[in-house]
Length: 375
Image (cartoon, rainbow, N blue to C red; front, side, top):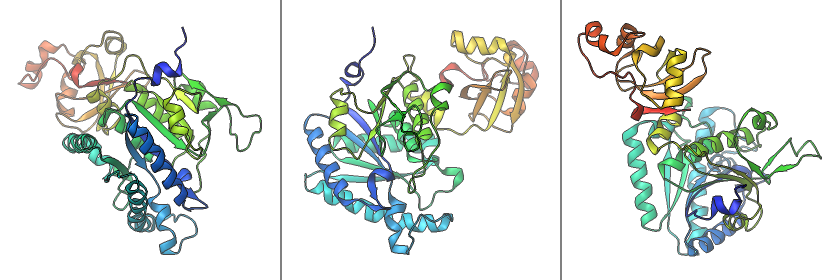
Protein backbone atom coordinates (compact mmCIF):
# COMPACT_ATOMS: atom_id res chain seq x y z
CA UNK A 1 0.00 0.00 0.00
CA UNK A 2 1.35 3.43 -0.97
CA UNK A 3 2.50 5.61 1.89
CA UNK A 4 0.48 8.82 2.06
CA UNK A 5 1.69 12.28 2.97
CA UNK A 6 -0.43 12.21 6.09
CA UNK A 7 1.27 9.02 7.27
CA UNK A 8 4.69 10.61 6.82
CA UNK A 9 3.77 13.90 8.48
CA UNK A 10 1.16 13.02 11.11
CA UNK A 11 3.68 12.59 13.94
CA UNK A 12 5.79 15.67 13.16
CA UNK A 13 6.36 17.96 16.14
CA UNK A 14 9.79 19.54 15.65
CA UNK A 15 10.64 21.07 12.27
CA UNK A 16 13.75 22.59 10.75
CA UNK A 17 12.59 25.34 8.38
CA UNK A 18 15.19 26.67 5.98
CA UNK A 19 14.47 30.05 4.39
CA UNK A 20 16.44 30.85 1.26
CA UNK A 21 17.45 34.34 0.20
CA UNK A 22 14.98 34.12 -2.69
CA UNK A 23 12.15 33.88 -0.13
CA UNK A 24 13.47 36.54 2.23
CA UNK A 25 14.22 39.19 -0.39
CA UNK A 26 12.44 41.22 -3.02
CA UNK A 27 14.56 42.78 -5.76
CA UNK A 28 17.69 41.93 -3.81
CA UNK A 29 16.59 43.55 -0.53
CA UNK A 30 14.96 42.10 2.59
CA UNK A 31 11.20 41.83 2.13
CA UNK A 32 9.69 43.20 5.36
CA UNK A 33 6.12 41.93 4.69
CA UNK A 34 7.47 38.38 4.50
CA UNK A 35 8.90 38.55 8.04
CA UNK A 36 5.56 39.76 9.39
CA UNK A 37 3.64 36.95 7.67
CA UNK A 38 6.20 34.29 8.58
CA UNK A 39 6.07 35.25 12.26
CA UNK A 40 2.26 35.12 12.24
CA UNK A 41 2.23 31.65 10.69
CA UNK A 42 4.87 30.29 13.09
CA UNK A 43 2.93 31.73 16.06
CA UNK A 44 -0.27 29.97 14.96
CA UNK A 45 1.50 26.64 14.44
CA UNK A 46 3.30 26.86 17.78
CA UNK A 47 -0.11 27.14 19.45
CA UNK A 48 -1.01 23.85 17.74
CA UNK A 49 1.97 22.15 19.39
CA UNK A 50 4.62 22.43 16.70
CA UNK A 51 8.16 23.60 17.46
CA UNK A 52 10.64 25.07 15.01
CA UNK A 53 14.31 25.66 14.36
CA UNK A 54 14.73 28.26 11.62
CA UNK A 55 17.77 28.22 9.34
CA UNK A 56 17.89 31.63 7.73
CA UNK A 57 19.88 33.01 4.84
CA UNK A 58 19.85 36.71 3.94
CA UNK A 59 22.74 38.25 5.91
CA UNK A 60 24.76 39.20 2.84
CA UNK A 61 21.67 40.50 1.02
CA UNK A 62 20.75 42.59 4.06
CA UNK A 63 24.16 44.27 4.09
CA UNK A 64 24.48 45.10 0.40
CA UNK A 65 22.88 48.52 0.49
CA UNK A 66 24.92 49.74 3.46
CA UNK A 67 28.15 49.18 1.54
CA UNK A 68 26.82 50.50 -1.75
CA UNK A 69 26.54 47.21 -3.64
CA UNK A 70 23.72 46.75 -6.15
CA UNK A 71 24.55 43.05 -6.63
CA UNK A 72 26.29 40.58 -4.30
CA UNK A 73 30.09 41.07 -4.36
CA UNK A 74 32.42 38.32 -5.54
CA UNK A 75 35.37 38.97 -3.23
CA UNK A 76 35.27 37.10 0.09
CA UNK A 77 36.24 40.07 2.32
CA UNK A 78 33.45 42.15 0.75
CA UNK A 79 30.93 39.33 1.27
CA UNK A 80 32.01 39.00 4.88
CA UNK A 81 31.69 42.74 5.41
CA UNK A 82 28.15 42.65 3.98
CA UNK A 83 27.34 39.70 6.26
CA UNK A 84 28.72 41.51 9.32
CA UNK A 85 26.37 44.44 8.72
CA UNK A 86 23.48 42.40 7.35
CA UNK A 87 23.34 39.78 10.12
CA UNK A 88 22.44 42.48 12.64
CA UNK A 89 19.75 43.90 10.35
CA UNK A 90 18.41 40.42 9.61
CA UNK A 91 18.06 39.53 13.30
CA UNK A 92 16.42 42.88 13.99
CA UNK A 93 13.67 42.03 11.48
CA UNK A 94 13.07 38.65 13.07
CA UNK A 95 13.10 40.00 16.62
CA UNK A 96 10.63 42.76 15.78
CA UNK A 97 8.26 40.46 13.86
CA UNK A 98 8.17 37.77 16.55
CA UNK A 99 7.97 40.24 19.44
CA UNK A 100 4.45 41.09 18.23
CA UNK A 101 3.54 37.48 19.14
CA UNK A 102 5.53 37.44 22.39
CA UNK A 103 7.99 34.92 20.96
CA UNK A 104 11.62 35.24 22.03
CA UNK A 105 14.21 34.51 19.34
CA UNK A 106 17.84 33.46 19.71
CA UNK A 107 20.71 33.73 17.23
CA UNK A 108 23.04 30.77 16.63
CA UNK A 109 25.95 31.26 14.22
CA UNK A 110 27.84 28.14 13.14
CA UNK A 111 30.67 27.07 10.87
CA UNK A 112 31.27 23.56 9.54
CA UNK A 113 34.15 23.31 12.01
CA UNK A 114 31.63 23.61 14.87
CA UNK A 115 29.81 20.56 13.52
CA UNK A 116 32.91 18.50 12.69
CA UNK A 117 34.33 18.92 16.17
CA UNK A 118 32.44 16.41 18.30
CA UNK A 119 32.67 18.46 21.50
CA UNK A 120 31.40 21.66 19.87
CA UNK A 121 28.73 19.63 18.05
CA UNK A 122 27.42 18.34 21.38
CA UNK A 123 27.61 21.83 22.89
CA UNK A 124 25.51 23.20 20.02
CA UNK A 125 23.07 20.33 20.48
CA UNK A 126 22.69 21.08 24.19
CA UNK A 127 22.18 24.79 23.47
CA UNK A 128 19.42 24.05 20.95
CA UNK A 129 17.74 21.64 23.35
CA UNK A 130 17.79 24.22 26.15
CA UNK A 131 16.37 26.96 23.92
CA UNK A 132 13.55 24.73 22.66
CA UNK A 133 12.66 23.64 26.18
CA UNK A 134 12.41 27.33 27.13
CA UNK A 135 10.02 27.95 24.19
CA UNK A 136 12.62 30.16 22.48
CA UNK A 137 12.80 30.14 18.67
CA UNK A 138 16.37 29.40 17.47
CA UNK A 139 17.48 31.29 14.35
CA UNK A 140 20.50 29.56 12.83
CA UNK A 141 22.82 30.87 10.14
CA UNK A 142 26.32 30.17 8.91
CA UNK A 143 28.84 32.56 10.43
CA UNK A 144 29.61 34.27 7.12
CA UNK A 145 31.70 36.99 8.75
CA UNK A 146 34.54 34.59 9.53
CA UNK A 147 33.89 31.56 7.35
CA UNK A 148 36.42 30.45 4.73
CA UNK A 149 36.25 27.58 2.26
CA UNK A 150 37.84 25.07 4.66
CA UNK A 151 35.17 25.60 7.34
CA UNK A 152 32.19 26.42 5.13
CA UNK A 153 29.04 24.30 4.95
CA UNK A 154 28.68 25.17 1.28
CA UNK A 155 25.17 26.55 1.70
CA UNK A 156 22.38 26.69 4.26
CA UNK A 157 20.61 23.71 2.69
CA UNK A 158 23.50 21.55 3.88
CA UNK A 159 23.47 23.25 7.29
CA UNK A 160 19.74 22.57 7.64
CA UNK A 161 20.26 18.90 6.71
CA UNK A 162 22.94 18.50 9.39
CA UNK A 163 20.62 20.06 11.96
CA UNK A 164 18.10 17.23 11.44
CA UNK A 165 20.25 14.95 13.58
CA UNK A 166 21.84 17.65 15.75
CA UNK A 167 18.42 18.90 16.88
CA UNK A 168 16.72 15.49 16.44
CA UNK A 169 13.85 16.91 14.41
CA UNK A 170 10.94 15.21 12.65
CA UNK A 171 10.84 17.12 9.36
CA UNK A 172 13.12 19.17 7.13
CA UNK A 173 11.23 21.95 5.33
CA UNK A 174 13.12 23.80 2.59
CA UNK A 175 11.27 26.94 1.48
CA UNK A 176 12.30 28.45 -1.82
CA UNK A 177 10.77 30.50 -4.65
CA UNK A 178 9.62 27.40 -6.59
CA UNK A 179 6.62 25.18 -5.86
CA UNK A 180 8.91 22.16 -5.50
CA UNK A 181 10.98 19.88 -7.74
CA UNK A 182 10.10 19.83 -11.43
CA UNK A 183 11.03 17.26 -14.05
CA UNK A 184 12.85 20.06 -15.90
CA UNK A 185 13.54 23.76 -15.37
CA UNK A 186 10.15 25.55 -15.11
CA UNK A 187 11.85 28.90 -15.74
CA UNK A 188 12.89 27.82 -19.24
CA UNK A 189 10.44 25.02 -20.13
CA UNK A 190 6.70 25.70 -20.17
CA UNK A 191 5.95 21.98 -20.11
CA UNK A 192 7.68 21.39 -16.79
CA UNK A 193 5.68 19.26 -14.31
CA UNK A 194 5.86 19.36 -10.53
CA UNK A 195 7.01 16.09 -8.93
CA UNK A 196 4.79 15.43 -5.90
CA UNK A 197 6.85 12.65 -4.29
CA UNK A 198 10.38 11.34 -4.57
CA UNK A 199 11.13 7.98 -2.99
CA UNK A 200 14.91 8.23 -3.31
CA UNK A 201 17.39 10.81 -4.57
CA UNK A 202 19.07 8.73 -7.26
CA UNK A 203 20.74 9.43 -10.60
CA UNK A 204 17.38 9.68 -12.37
CA UNK A 205 16.25 12.46 -10.05
CA UNK A 206 19.52 14.39 -10.13
CA UNK A 207 19.56 13.98 -13.91
CA UNK A 208 16.50 16.16 -14.50
CA UNK A 209 17.32 18.78 -11.90
CA UNK A 210 19.64 21.59 -12.95
CA UNK A 211 22.10 23.35 -10.65
CA UNK A 212 20.64 26.79 -11.27
CA UNK A 213 21.13 29.43 -8.59
CA UNK A 214 19.21 32.55 -7.68
CA UNK A 215 20.79 35.97 -7.96
CA UNK A 216 21.08 36.36 -4.19
CA UNK A 217 21.35 32.75 -3.00
CA UNK A 218 24.33 30.39 -2.81
CA UNK A 219 22.54 27.11 -3.42
CA UNK A 220 20.25 25.69 -6.05
CA UNK A 221 17.82 22.83 -6.45
CA UNK A 222 20.72 20.37 -6.60
CA UNK A 223 21.88 21.41 -3.13
CA UNK A 224 18.32 20.90 -1.87
CA UNK A 225 18.28 17.38 -3.29
CA UNK A 226 21.53 16.68 -1.45
CA UNK A 227 20.02 18.06 1.75
CA UNK A 228 16.95 15.84 1.31
CA UNK A 229 19.21 12.82 0.80
CA UNK A 230 21.07 13.54 4.03
CA UNK A 231 17.83 14.01 5.96
CA UNK A 232 16.43 10.78 4.50
CA UNK A 233 19.50 8.92 5.76
CA UNK A 234 18.53 9.96 9.30
CA UNK A 235 14.98 8.74 8.69
CA UNK A 236 13.53 12.22 8.29
CA UNK A 237 11.17 13.29 5.46
CA UNK A 238 11.85 16.51 3.55
CA UNK A 239 9.47 18.85 1.77
CA UNK A 240 10.62 21.45 -0.75
CA UNK A 241 7.94 24.08 -1.27
CA UNK A 242 7.25 27.68 -2.23
CA UNK A 243 7.84 29.90 0.79
CA UNK A 244 6.26 32.88 -0.96
CA UNK A 245 2.83 31.25 -0.77
CA UNK A 246 0.88 32.24 2.37
CA UNK A 247 -0.04 29.34 4.64
CA UNK A 248 2.34 26.90 2.98
CA UNK A 249 3.72 25.49 6.25
CA UNK A 250 0.27 24.82 7.72
CA UNK A 251 -0.84 23.00 4.56
CA UNK A 252 2.28 20.85 4.51
CA UNK A 253 1.90 19.87 8.17
CA UNK A 254 -1.77 19.04 7.53
CA UNK A 255 -0.65 16.52 4.91
CA UNK A 256 -1.88 18.49 1.88
CA UNK A 257 -0.33 17.83 -1.51
CA UNK A 258 1.97 20.86 -1.34
CA UNK A 259 5.49 20.95 -2.75
CA UNK A 260 7.67 17.88 -3.23
CA UNK A 261 7.87 15.26 -0.48
CA UNK A 262 11.03 13.18 -0.10
CA UNK A 263 10.50 9.92 1.75
CA UNK A 264 12.85 8.90 4.59
CA UNK A 265 15.11 5.87 4.52
CA UNK A 266 13.78 2.84 6.38
CA UNK A 267 17.21 1.67 7.63
CA UNK A 268 18.02 5.04 9.19
CA UNK A 269 21.40 6.05 10.56
CA UNK A 270 21.76 6.81 14.25
CA UNK A 271 22.56 10.35 15.32
CA UNK A 272 26.25 9.49 15.72
CA UNK A 273 26.35 7.67 12.39
CA UNK A 274 24.69 10.64 10.67
CA UNK A 275 27.38 12.90 12.11
CA UNK A 276 30.07 10.51 10.87
CA UNK A 277 28.55 10.22 7.42
CA UNK A 278 27.93 13.87 6.65
CA UNK A 279 29.50 16.24 9.17
CA UNK A 280 33.11 15.12 9.46
CA UNK A 281 35.82 15.62 6.85
CA UNK A 282 37.71 12.38 6.02
CA UNK A 283 41.46 12.57 6.65
CA UNK A 284 42.29 9.58 4.46
CA UNK A 285 40.93 6.66 2.44
CA UNK A 286 40.91 2.89 2.82
CA UNK A 287 40.47 0.81 -0.35
CA UNK A 288 38.73 -2.46 0.52
CA UNK A 289 38.48 -5.82 -1.21
CA UNK A 290 35.13 -7.21 -2.31
CA UNK A 291 34.81 -9.53 0.66
CA UNK A 292 35.16 -6.64 3.10
CA UNK A 293 32.64 -4.58 1.13
CA UNK A 294 30.08 -7.39 1.31
CA UNK A 295 30.70 -7.87 5.01
CA UNK A 296 30.13 -4.17 5.73
CA UNK A 297 27.09 -3.68 3.50
CA UNK A 298 25.31 -7.00 3.91
CA UNK A 299 26.29 -8.16 7.40
CA UNK A 300 26.92 -4.85 9.20
CA UNK A 301 30.30 -6.02 10.53
CA UNK A 302 33.29 -4.05 11.74
CA UNK A 303 36.18 -3.44 9.34
CA UNK A 304 39.04 -5.88 9.90
CA UNK A 305 42.61 -5.39 8.61
CA UNK A 306 42.34 -8.45 6.34
CA UNK A 307 39.89 -6.61 4.06
CA UNK A 308 42.08 -3.57 3.42
CA UNK A 309 44.02 -3.42 0.14
CA UNK A 310 45.41 0.12 0.17
CA UNK A 311 45.78 3.04 2.59
CA UNK A 312 45.81 6.64 1.35
CA UNK A 313 46.56 9.74 3.39
CA UNK A 314 48.21 10.55 6.69
CA UNK A 315 45.87 10.24 9.67
CA UNK A 316 46.02 9.35 13.34
CA UNK A 317 44.08 7.23 15.80
CA UNK A 318 40.45 8.34 16.03
CA UNK A 319 40.50 10.29 12.77
CA UNK A 320 37.66 9.92 10.23
CA UNK A 321 38.39 8.10 6.97
CA UNK A 322 36.49 7.07 3.86
CA UNK A 323 36.04 3.40 2.97
CA UNK A 324 35.97 2.69 -0.76
CA UNK A 325 35.17 -0.39 -2.82
CA UNK A 326 37.60 -1.69 -5.49
CA UNK A 327 36.04 0.73 -8.04
CA UNK A 328 36.83 3.66 -5.70
CA UNK A 329 33.17 4.26 -4.80
CA UNK A 330 32.75 5.49 -1.23
CA UNK A 331 30.60 3.06 0.76
CA UNK A 332 31.22 4.14 4.36
CA UNK A 333 32.97 6.51 6.74
CA UNK A 334 34.34 5.75 10.14
CA UNK A 335 36.79 6.50 12.94
CA UNK A 336 39.96 4.40 12.87
CA UNK A 337 41.45 2.51 15.80
CA UNK A 338 44.97 2.67 14.30
CA UNK A 339 47.04 5.33 12.53
CA UNK A 340 47.68 5.30 8.79
CA UNK A 341 51.26 4.17 9.38
CA UNK A 342 50.16 1.17 11.41
CA UNK A 343 47.23 0.24 9.14
CA UNK A 344 49.68 0.02 6.24
CA UNK A 345 51.62 -2.57 8.26
CA UNK A 346 48.61 -4.74 9.06
CA UNK A 347 46.58 -4.28 5.83
CA UNK A 348 45.61 -7.63 4.35
CA UNK A 349 46.62 -9.54 7.49
CA UNK A 350 44.54 -11.47 10.00
CA UNK A 351 43.63 -9.73 13.24
CA UNK A 352 45.64 -12.26 15.24
CA UNK A 353 48.81 -10.96 13.53
CA UNK A 354 48.35 -7.37 14.76
CA UNK A 355 50.57 -7.71 17.84
CA UNK A 356 53.36 -9.38 15.88
CA UNK A 357 53.29 -6.58 13.27
CA UNK A 358 52.93 -3.58 15.60
CA UNK A 359 54.15 -4.69 19.00
CA UNK A 360 50.79 -3.81 20.51
CA UNK A 361 47.13 -4.68 19.98
CA UNK A 362 44.40 -1.99 20.24
CA UNK A 363 41.69 -4.37 19.10
CA UNK A 364 40.90 -6.67 16.20
CA UNK A 365 38.98 -4.00 14.25
CA UNK A 366 40.45 -1.16 12.22
CA UNK A 367 37.02 0.49 12.44
CA UNK A 368 34.49 -0.82 14.94
CA UNK A 369 30.93 -0.99 13.61
CA UNK A 370 29.78 1.46 16.31
CA UNK A 371 32.13 4.01 14.73
CA UNK A 372 31.08 3.23 11.15
CA UNK A 373 28.39 4.85 8.98
CA UNK A 374 27.30 3.15 5.77
CA UNK A 375 26.62 5.48 2.86
